[in-house]
Length: 357
Image (tube, rainbow, N blue to C red):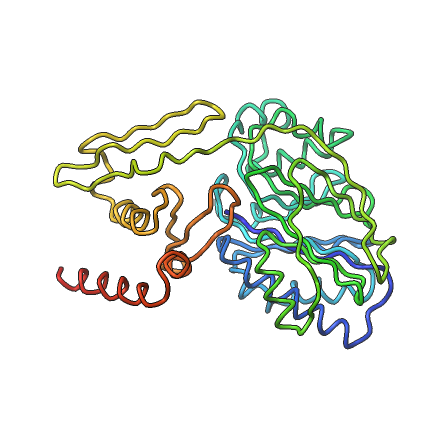
């Protein structure tokens, strides 16, 4: 689960105070976006002198680097769009060159999602692309419109990109990946991020109120021309496209049951490609503590084990909402379902249980 975030602003120069506020908001959004991926970070400043900076640092540390801060400072001079990304690696090695954003031809972009027919698309586009996301931007670069660019992909995606015109930011998503925006008219500035609370919290911390955060509609390409931003609205062009997203259906109440001999009755089905995986007794999961803990978390929160993942860097569990793509910590999930008091009790029970061994 990667995170994309960024900013688009009017060419009207910021005052010193405005720049200080905008810089703080963007920094907070970048740091929060680390929860969606900490394998690497990157940012692209788009303008007369487009540059991309990448790092294997998590975003909370990347924001303190010279490269990140130079990119943000460019908003006062020659850049009006910044594209940020936090990577959770799904395809391609965890190396700096595989971090986002990417430049492919005339396109600079960042992607949250996965390409499932990567070998097919490598054959059609470029066998040398080491990261699935590069294939999407290769297609966007080569095709005349977004419909033609994505039609052959079996993919989940939320995209931020600039193509040729450095004054126009393009954003789009399909149904499985979230993407949110907020426009601050007094700054003639738009912020975007993979989760609404990233923007909401950052604006609140900067004492910016009365600003709504919106979810972008699925299967719609939003094109924001920053030269048309004013102190009332953004003025955006929208283009609809057809795309059939994967449908993930969790079979509720069919979670695996841990027995001394193994796991029984576990089925996950993706109706888009009719893939069905079944695990019977004595499956490999019995010796995997992460899988067993995912099962226990799923049963406690009435979710599915496959919707939980363990982040080794943070030594923490996170839940992915299969409908919205929203990522929540273990503690937040317990708070939502059981309340603070029960979370404390459950945490205590888990600790006691571990101490037994």
